Image 1 (cartoon, rainbow, N blue to C red):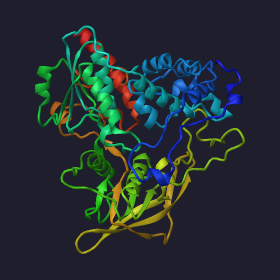
Image 2: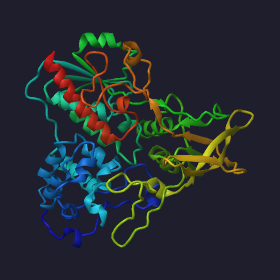
Image 3: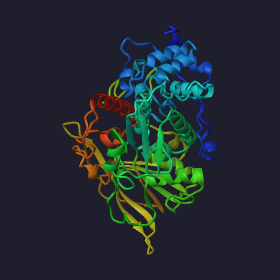
Image 4: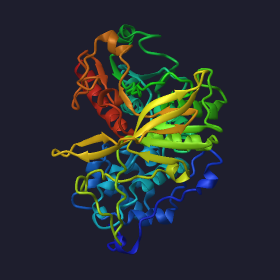
Length: 484
């Protein structure tokens, strides 16, 4: 570490954010990157630990102490190169990753952890600004052809790795634009879509071919792809949505969160409606069922669209609000350092307004004579842990409550990949949880030459995990191509 007393002299600093009342007037990003001075200072807070738990907590295995050291020395280009050595898309993870690395930071034991994610975002943005991040097409081509089904972060990472190894890579995407959830599933105010398009343009420059509007299994069969390609990677996500099966579910005005968020992105970028239908929260009482990040995204999007009210429901109890001592947080005993801490987390969307209701179970939807949604009925739950530490609940008597609403958004996750298409056509074996069965060493399915990575293999997860799996499946495909 270049500044031995950096952690004593310099406080943690994160990027400045536009005030909530101002950022609600638009749908663009509202966070600024660290200045060069602050960037170097924050890098100097890293202690260059003998055992860097931040490195261990990151699915990508980012060598965080190395690029923090280079950042503290203001050698930003070398710092970026160290970052890019393990992370294909730091401009994405620096914005939308929940930063498990920071939870595991050794400094976080008794101080505020290093601002790892902020440094990552700033290095990536500086790299694009200075032209340090540019296309890297391979010098030689092997002539081997690889198909990647799905253009989300796992598919893009796999495609880039294999293309740089000299193989001819074609990415198939059934949507009109590549990017997967990066393009359609994350609001513009968290990830500007021009950043996604910029990265796609670089990948095209490197020689990757994108075929959008092509639904593999419908427009082209896996048998046809087997004739054209030497290997195929399925990185098509876990698109089968979990639903709330309660009375009144068929009412008009109830949508999956993905439909709502995708509609907002498409309307914002093109002025076009999703499948001929614009889903708008303007002037409506909105309920969001699901207390996770996707539900939070629905809240922030609804507020920007001019919702009359927004309430987000979570079936689990409210996590503890950790008390902050003069120098550190007290972590709960069930999630000690360096584990991901069980605590109340407030997103930028929560800062902007709306309400959150904890330990509420959705019981039924009400509708009028025309079938239009008018209300959500919930009841409260009492949660406790049994002798094995597992959460159990009981319904609180007479706790039913009626919440007026005319737009309900279901954000309760996904249950696995869609079976129709490649999985059913090839007879690909599934695991106990309904995901494609492929181990973490080879990423190979039971069909020779067909591999799987990302949410389609591990289930719904983080962007950083998707990129990590994309890199690892590329290594497995490379070994396969060399031996066949």
